[in-house]
Length: 415
Ligand SMILES: *Cc1c(COP(=O)(O)O)cnc(C)c1O
Image 1 (cartoon, rainbow, N blue to C red):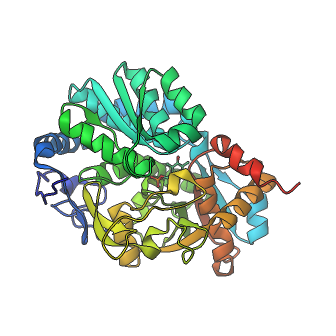
Image 2: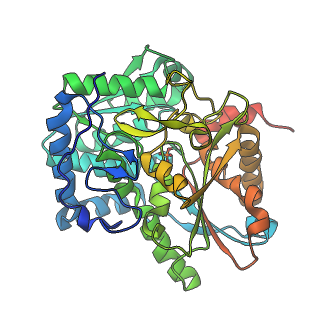
């Protein structure tokens, strides 16, 4: 696919909550430091430019915000609780709060973004929505919002994933979506994304709802913006519960980076807050079976932006591996590549066995069965336990619930 660096319209960024002058915001060309940008075929240029303009317009639009927040409250069930995990706190001798995105409608944070983008699509007069999905969580969230708005929905999904995610495929079909199995490459998320972009090139009137903080500008910024409700709520909830609106530590898992971006958004400029991310170590970063892009990646271009990518000497993308489908991606959102590079975030690679251990631990201590992706974030507690003080406030986002991962968990029952 032909790639081309684009300098598209950037008006409106001075009003971004991250601030044009803020140290961690996107620049006028859609870059976080050296990462990001818009590497798209010429044919999509007009489409992406119109999208950027429409997105900039709704950011400051009170009627958009009212409609969006009404749905977040009455349809998704927000605000999601910020729950003080007493027994987990005792175990790690610090104060741990869980941001419960697992309690959202459809079971994860992805619905926050899908709703924001579909409202934008509606305002732009679009009637056909396309999306990519790996495990199917973003596909289900998108199909859900399409049913809600009465719009056509096509979801691209690798054939391997279609076969192993039977329930989510059936949910999407029941919701009225067409699931297109993708048979190129490895038949997984990377290939589904390639196919969605290919379809978008031939049908540029479609609205492409990307599910994470990846893709060409403005997607990484836009998806982060729609997920920023997570940290907006954390601020209010901490203020109410402890009389102070910031934690000492913030933690989340990073696949493409959307739940992490939402969790960090309003705290990026607050140096009092230490931020720690979990990426998927798979069988270990030296095993050749890993999805630890920040540890192992080199700069390259994937799916429309410049970021860290797992690749071989010839620049061929290497197939990632993780027990968790949601973290099994060879790239990473450009913002997270940047945050790690400049030291704003500390990043641990969490291996499959460490994530499983954390999942069983929180289930038995708190009665919460987390998504296997979220369990990677929870495993950071063990990695960092020696740095916590008893009075520290640690906030961890539980990005989703574990229903979809029961087959994986059952395989690892020890009694
Ligand atoms: C998709 C998914 C992730 C990974 O995506 P991010 O964009 O990095 O948040 C994490 N957790 C759950 C439950 C997911 O469904």
